[in-house]
Length: 516
Ligand code: NG6
Ligand code: CA
Picture 1 (cartoon, protein in one colour):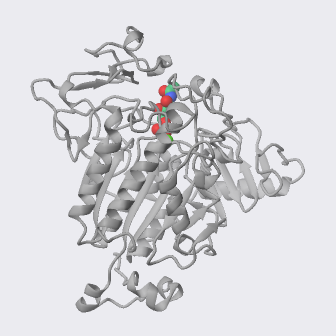
Picture 2 (cartoon, rainbow, N blue to C red; picture 1 turned 180 degrees about the vertical axis):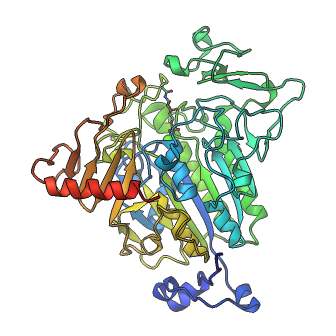
Picture 3 (cartoon, rainbow, N blue to C red; picture 1 turned 90 degrees about the vertical axis):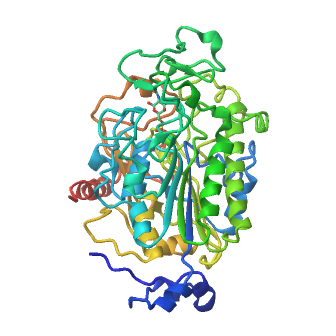
């Protein structure tokens, strides 16, 4: 059984300083004491496919992200922070479970996949609930729903509610996958019972035109994979029929999602809350609202970054209006590295100019190289952070689980969240220590140890769509070793010079794999 600990936050930080607070008081609090303690709210902004170099606070000059930059000014800007994987579903799986996705064979999911997290087991939102928090997820899900075949006309479950979120408002899979409807808690929003919705990833059941048949209806062209059912002038992966009244309009996302998040915060302002806010931006299809069109010279992808920055500002402003900003720990990060062409003719490549979405790193989304997982990460918490600035601590999003559990005073047994480490000191102080070793998931596995980066050999078959991509996936049938202290861009495989280091890192990787 877990034991709740009293974790001093808020007031305590200003009175006693950080050190006193990171040492937890292990006695059970009295009722009066608990009433005096203001537990911090937690907001996790989780952008889709945002690269290390995509923010002005991380060096971008072709796009300006003032709202996110203000967070960087006010908190800690991490320079060696990582999503646990270089694709979306595995990263989200690890963030919410504290376990590597390979243990669950979690890969990119179709839009009708069952929920891949076991709802009978502990999860990050359940940790928050145990600490007395209200919890919500608003935005892109992509972790599957239901336990097999989903009937979208009935209650869709298990899903986030069963995983420990009190409220959920979802884009069920990705913007480029059907169903193109919102799911609020267990139900599709605005569904007309006389027009039942059906979804298939196996056969064409579409009652709408397809991208392959009616390209004249499209706002932008797409590859074959993204050329099935057309909704809102955008062809998608998968087929859908019915549900006409429930269709989303992609250009409305910035308002729809921020409104839902604001409402949740307003309704929860008197109790501690945790809000997980995964954006649909800047994943394809990029369809920014007209308010943001033309705001950069980079076309749809750049404008989607501006839109995402605006949404971040809206939510932070609401926290400020509610008087909650000081006592809220905000984490801003991305689920994987950047990609330009991900299936739609949105001119992301042609209009890039001299913008470098990967920053100084090699690769991008899907890649075993650093840019696959090294992403922007900013943490603010005015009541809790002692020293602002840049941190080069090695941190992984898989560590949110144990770090946030410590923050809210919940003990996590060693059998739970087995891959997560408590790195709360690094989240609260520029000098706080991060990890000594860190695993990165892609189509293979890699291991970081300080300046060393080992990439395990890949023996599987690279999917065609991945081989065709311009992004360098970093896969090789031979093991690779890079010294990032001299070769940040992973150009020189030095495995022949340092065979012992490679052997040691490979052994550490095997130990992690065999952990359970
Ligand atoms: C890929 C899609 C890509 C994107 C990705 C998921 C093809 C050819 N490509 O399979 O467009 O949707 O899945 O991205 O279908 S992620 O960020 O959610 O992992
Ligand atoms: Ca992603």
